[in-house]
Image (spheres, rainbow, N blue to C red):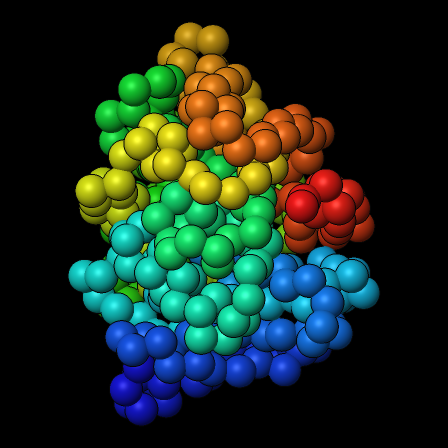
Length: 322
């Protein structure tokens, strides 16, 4: 990130309860926090699309009693560098691998939510041996975030239309930035099955309250080119989800949260259908690594509204690791 970019975006940020740090990974500088006993087992938290590290703020407070907890901003999010034209699973995954290598420097349990779960799976499959001690995939959109998946609905039958809306009205690097226009357009441009999600995806806190009249904090810190990358399919460039799952080299916890399929259209509100979760589990089990599959009655991003339950799930599962 050049100084001018950092200065331009400086007013986008708000203070948090933990100290933020920057590490130079080469192409980017990555923003992160590190809490807990330095000698405790290492845990790395990888946020969802449109979420900065502080979505885990409450969870970090709980988990740091058991772990040395690291939480990061991925490239294109928060105080980490924005990289126009360079958003895909290969670049995000390489950043996470470098972070473990340079900052954590020991085998790490990696836990990612949503697209952060896909990035976690990528690192567990393709990073150099020994970096990932265990992989926690918190409600990841396996198959459903592909343009033409082998199983079940794809990107534009799930949350793709929301991402298309963000990309169109906010523009790469917020070059358009028409939040008001986006909020007004949402009911017309989004399919009916996504209308209940407008408050959740574009609001602050309460999903029932509807869209926020001004940009919400976590999206102010986000490069909307991320959204465009998922809509166009470039986010998955050269990464096939089935191939990736079959190459994972660490024990896996896969969680599956709230999901609902529209009976008339097959459109999915949620991260995965039962079929997609079942196929992901089958492919994971083909690796002969230990696989735990846990359906949870929880929202997609469970760690923020339910930090205690999230910390309990993570802590209990990591105790099973060798």
